Image (tube, rainbow, N blue to C red; front, side, top):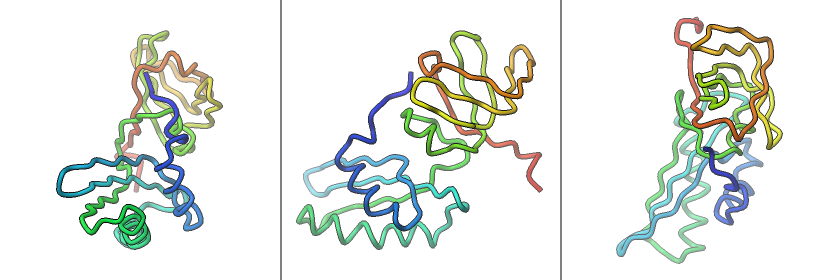
Length: 163
């Protein structure tokens, strides 16, 4: 089952407010406090282009000074990364962020993995285009899967199709 509600987290909201004007979407953010430092892990995505090291550096240079001042610490450890090609989806919110990307989900109703391109996600169901029910080898132009049926989800990549 996918989690729900990351967009209500105050840390997430603060990051989104800072990064959305730069063209980035926050995929995930987590904070971990230790006796010596605060560790902040941030995953960002851009629908316009593939994230590169310049993008990650720009995000770092905006986020680090702001949060080290807000949290009044010089011991902030910030890690900024891209979602990667095969990210495991943790929250329903991510299905909206990754619209247009290829995904593989396991449907409990179909008892099979389903691959397809995310067309939309409205909070109750996920709509996939060019969907393939893997175990049955069934192809669908469009397939709607209720979110309650999704046991796990992961971005996927078809290596042989890119040239």
